[in-house]
Image (cartoon, rainbow, N blue to C red; front, side, top):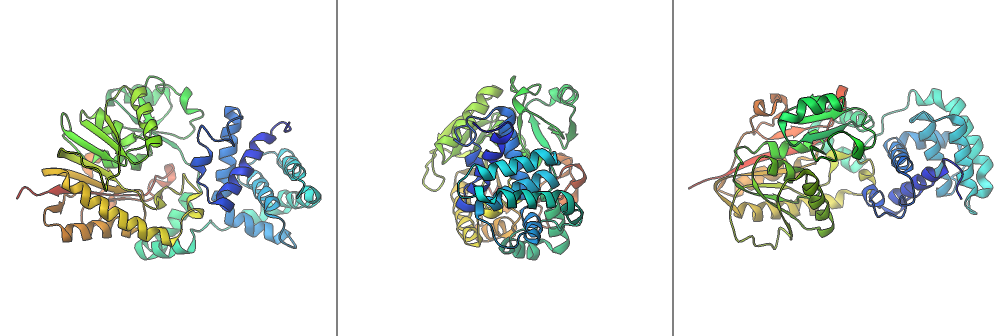
Length: 431
């Protein structure tokens, strides 16, 4: 039986090792069916996830500080324990006694590290006493070299530095409200701030399922930037709309709430269960299809299509700090090729005069600006339809030179930032 307060830290240790040693996504390990979290209480699960994310967000400066106190490299499990304790002490502000005692007990739990409990105790105490002064001047964690070098070319040094600073800040909870008429009441009940049009931001959310309006299906969790692709389509009432790569369903629900006849398609049958659950909770309707964009034959043409294509997800690192440890530069080429194929296939299903949104939660121009420029150049039926930022309650700084929308994690930094997205709206010519 684990000592009081130790269960969450044991789970965090397993998840940290899963990311760094096995390249397992955090989302896989925090899923409802995960063996790591299944036996924990709600508060323990939340703490395990929070501690793992804090450690990953500051991993590089934490390791730099640990190396200052370590004479030689300890076993990986011991380093992970030290990393977690450093995050508790220096990032999360946990009681030094609780953090250090737990680190020592974690070390003793394993035969391979039990003999190192004295070392762990000594290093953690030094972190608490001496390390705090060093930590005040610690550098912001940088992106992996392969990713940072690409982003420097795409956005420049100043923008990349601001993005990296945004990655380590606390992330608020954004929700999309089903009915605009409910926004004022929900804003008061949730003590939330209105952002853009139709989204609310909560700086401190707590357990999501207990918040006002959740059980009634009045809203769903969706980062503000992720809500923009669907909002770039208008006049959807009664229209046939296809939502590709739809899971977990935020955009599907937006389209359905706008009155569209939505077909939500995704390759993952498992992930589509989330779409069905969300639709049922919110009382919204959509046809759900499990299929591959590259082989599916819909048999009908659509008035509008939304393709939120698979990508590096480099725009979501602020919420998924495990991502830099899971993908490398080789993955980019295959993703760009897949996006190109999906874009070409999906555009064939669009009616003449119809609108198509192509979006990625990526910061890389290869997955956004360059992808669309090449597509329009090689497809004489396609043209870019500049997005009206005024209608979205945004400003011109969010637009690219070609009229596409680009968000960065550093936007609204003083209020919690947002995910990085690229959004293009395409028209299919009638002639």
